[in-house]
Length: 118
Length: 110
Image (cartoon, rainbow over all chains, first blue to last red; front, side, top):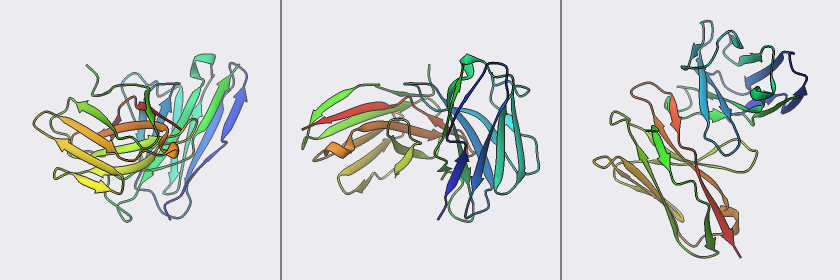
């Protein structure tokens, strides 16, 4: 139980294009979803916290107009990297929590999406 | 100062040895603490939660020192499969956001 999927698992795109990444909780309804970014040899950096039906809360320094988050249902959140540039190349990971399954501190992680912008 | 600090390593350890990592955190209001492991190009996986009384799970022992604001992880009888990056994770205040250390890389050698 508590499986989180991400799609696509990897993507290569040209500079200036937009890329959408989906995060789904497959067998549970997520209370909250989180989006992280991880550059090589660095820690996971929280980008935003997302709850179904409300606007995402972005961390300081994360441009909300560039990283659009839509949390349309209790099982789906999407991150769209708009006008991607090479510096946006990174490993994007989502996670989800469920107060039904565990405490709010337990996050179930998706397998990540590796984005390469040429 | 980083919110969560770890020695990046790498720690090169022979198979069967015991290895210990420490991690310090800056937010004294943090209530929940975890160790995750992350394999190369994979998502992090929860290794264990860390409780005030200390806890053990097989070869792994975690300790929390609130006064000094550090967390430790001890791995006994290390296996080749223990090679990974170990991430120290702390919650942020009373909400459920997690703050991640940069990780300590462990390499177990045969």
